[in-house]
Every structure is written in C-alpha cells, then in structure tokens.
Image (cartoon, rainbow, N blue to C red; front, side, top):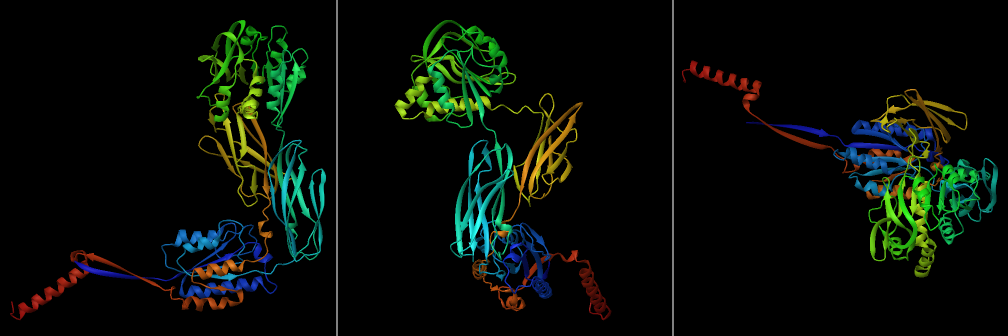
Length: 631
C-alpha cells in the first residue's frame, strides 16, 4: 500500500452585510454622506477580497446578495442575517461577520440572541443618530378589523413626540363621510408618549377606511408617520329572528331573552293570525311555538317559511298531523295527551358543543310537557336530548336537529322551557345554561352551509404591501366534485382606478393565483369561468396595508450593536473608522486559515505510472548486474 496526503487550505470567510432599510436615511447623523459611505463599503469589499474569501449581503424585509443598496426597504430583520449565516455557513471557516446597521429592527427576534449562535467575531458598523430629532408620530394603532353595522368599535392610538415640548397638534379621524373626531393633543415633554382611546361608529356595510392624522409641527423629521389609515370590515351580523306563536305563552319571553343576550340577533314576536308575509320574508330564522296549531289556519305561514330555517316548539295546542307533514325530520302520531319528560343529554351529539356544566344543569332541570305518542325519524338527524319519563330513559327525541333540501330544522318536542330559565337562576344565580342552549341552537340553525359552485377567496383579508397576494378558487360540478378543467380569470381593481387582470394556475383539483406585490389600498375583484354552458362569477375584496414601520422609530440603537460586537469578540465601529477594519481582522487571532489533510491509501499496482517507473528501475538494475556477472 502507498499512502498519499493531499493538503488544502481554506481561507477565512468574511461576511459583509449592509442594512438597506429606509430608517438608515431617516436616522442618519448630520455629517453622514450616503455616497461617501457606499464608496467606503466598496473599498472595504476590495481590500478584504485580496486576503479572504468574501460574501456580501444586503438586508431589509429580505436578504439579497451584493451591496447594491438604495436604503428604501420597508422592514428590518437583523436577526435573519445571523440565522442565514448559521444555517448556510456553519460548516465553513467563518473568520468574521461585519454588519452595517442603525440597530433598529421591526421584524424578527432580538438579534442579540440570534448572534450568540455564531462562533466568529462580529464587527458592527454603527449608523444613525442616537439623539432624538424633532418628530411627532403615531407609533401604533390597536383595533379589531371587524365591526358590526350600527355598533361602535374602539381603537387605541399610541402617540409619541420628541423635542417638541410646548407644542399642540390636532388629532383627526376621518372616513369617506367626513371628519368623525377632532381632538387637540398637547405635548408636555421632549419625550412624550400618550395612549388615546376613541370610539368610532360602524355606519356603512363593507370594508371601510379610517384615516388617523396628527397635524404637522414645524421642522419635523418625517411627516409620513403623522398619518395612518386602518381598514375595518363592517358586517351586518344581525339576524332577524321571528317568533310566531299560536297564543301568548311564558316560553316566548324566555326564548326571546336568551336570544337577545347576543346583540347580533334582532327578535320579533307575532301571533300567527297577525304575522305579515313581509315579516316572514325578512326573517333569517322562524321559531314556531305550537304552530301549526289546532285552532288557527297556519298553511300560509308554513308555505311562506318553506325555505327558512325553523325551530318547532311543540305543545298542547300543536296540530301534530300538520306538523308531521310540514317537515322532513320527524313523524309523530298523538291523541293529544301530554306527559312530563326530563332531558337525557346524548353524548354523541356533534352539531355544536354544549359545555359540560350546561349539560349537567339541564339534565337536572324539571320536566317539560311533551306530546304522548309514537315518534319516528324520517331521515338523518342529530339528537341532543331524548325524553326521560320519570327515571326511565326512552328513545323518544326531546330536542333534535336535521336538514332538508335548503334549510336546517330543529324540533323541541315540549313546552315549558320558561321553567328551565327560572330554575337555572334559582339554583345557579344565572341563566348561563339555558342561554347557552338556546343561543347555540339559534347559531346552528342560521349558519347555512356554502352551496356555491364557484368560490374565490383571498388567503387572508389584509396583506402588507411587501407581501405576495395569494387568491384561491374552487369550482364544483353538479355532483359537488371539485374540477379545474376550464380557465378562471380575475380582474383586480383598486379605488384609484388601477386594474390588474390575471388567469389562475391549476393546482391538484382547484386553482391558485399569486398576484405578486400590489400597492397599498382597497381592492375589489371579479372572477369568472364557465363549466360547459353554465357561466359562474364570484366577487370579493381584500386590503393592502401600507408598510410604514421604518418611519415609526428614528433613534439608532447603538447599545444593541455594542453588545452584539462585545459578546462575539468583535468591536463596534463608526463609518469614519471603516479603514481600520482590515487591520483589526488581521490582528484577530480567531481569523486564520484552516489546513486540511486528506490521507489516501492505494495499492501500488493501481498507480500505473509509479508502478512502471519502479518496474523499469528494477529491470535496469537486473540487466546491469547480469552484464557485470553479478547474477
């Protein structure tokens, strides 16, 4: 065997990263010259390349190769630089990391902790000014992006001001309808912070924009951060619930009180002989208390409500024959006799969740009065309660749910639920159990399944302006199977009149569109396709929020840069000291080349050139000895 050793030398890898975010120019010192600094970076790049392997990066909301910087990035994630170095270069001979930044970050984790993972000295170039400049800004707005029509919603403003003591600004909040709020803000210190809570009206359905503005002070650092626009989706969440009763009954008040604890429901009560067709058409849910009934003609009510979700409440005045014929859930034959039955809660009910506390309480409530007779199920159903006669459980339903062609149906096969409400309060000092039962019953009945065959929706309602806008589309055939044979086109329009047209890409069995990055604003979209001869159309909207995080902080954080450099065996420098960096790195004993030896063992016969050379030498020696008579 022959041993060979290959020796390789790996130069130290120097990584030079430059912050390319907008805060670099916003927080700069008076004597900072952008062009001079960029020239210094280029010179540093050239000097380091002569002795080391060099990688250059620039970063803001994302990391890119090279030092082509414009200082216009909308976000800063310093920690992502250290994470990328650790992920991609941890098996390399990293000599040093150089990072030029102002220390201001508004995305990602604390870079101080992420930098601890690097086993190399870090040299920080401290940019920006640590002295606050005169500025007034809205630093944050807390709000819920959904509000209900007719209600008020609250927003919380965080206001900051620097070097502006003694000044007063005017805070205004405006919508399309005009100025909603005008309020003076008096600045009483040079490091001023104040939180203001405001209530705004939700007066119009749809996505509404609200512009919050602080009147400018003289000689402010930036006016961009004086204004912020928020988008709130105002939805008409109120559902009209119509209780149609055969006659006055305490059940009606009990049911109404439980429903009205949810402000999104409007409850109206009508006797069956007084209800109008218009009221039935406007209702999102019908509650028929002992309707159809023995003494009143209810045929028109049942006909007008044939497409509405319904909760039937049975009682002594119910027309059982007409009831059985009016729905596809349950059939009942009875001779008009009523009996007492308590609730036996079923454990295998999954249509909605009822808390364990409410289940226990309801099981212990007194009996309802139920029709005595034979009960039979017409089709699939979900049983929440069965009737228990005394201590004997039965299979007769007390409260069950189901669906027919176009609506959800529930049947409460007993009257007297008002007693449950009283009993709940007497025993528990609240109406929580009965309120939960009724409100969840109502919520289930009014929440219909989506039967649309063509659906288009954004991956979320609000995107940042530096995010890619992703939309999805689904197309169903008559058997409600997903198909993606035809093309799907879409037009996006913003309020400034700008329009964008796209065609969706096909995924496994649906569609997706990456519309890229769009300018901030409100967008409406209309998508269309055709399956055979049937045309489909879908509409919607989404919002692109302006990204102004870089303008909400203008004071450089050099303490962070000093800490990062110190904990990693490097040093913090200022732009004027850039020329010192090559000599500092050269003097650092951690920065050195690494030598690798790679031994290899081979059989002599495999090394043909060497083998034949040795063979030739031995042959010559043999011939020489033979000629001289030594052999």
